[in-house]
Image (tube, rainbow, N blue to C red; front, side, top):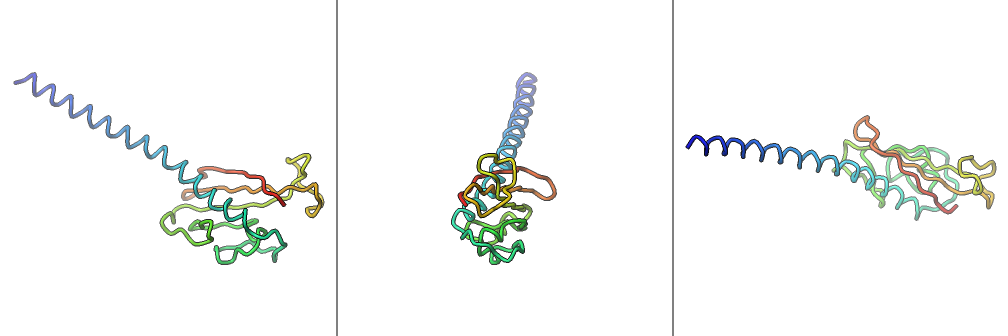
Length: 143
């Protein structure tokens, strides 16, 4: 009877430890996946937005995004979807967006003439959960 009690106690302890490790692994996997998903929402929106020059003022809501230029310098909290709607289910998260014209032959250098055929667009999305940066994602876009 004592052996059964000891074995039962060990089984409960092992099960608790296993449950906690699975929960921790799931949290560690979900956070980067959520961050990448939120960055992809901006990328998807950016791919279909007109490339015309806007008013130079970064958008503060999805409704203010009319051209790609409106995303440059924008910060969205709560994040916005590819359809430019607020995603209130992830209100603790935010997206910061930068759109830069870079030199096609040397992408590390900003283009001196953004209207040139030698310019390429670099979209950078930084995703935060609260104040913590979870990920920064970069894509190249056709001008």
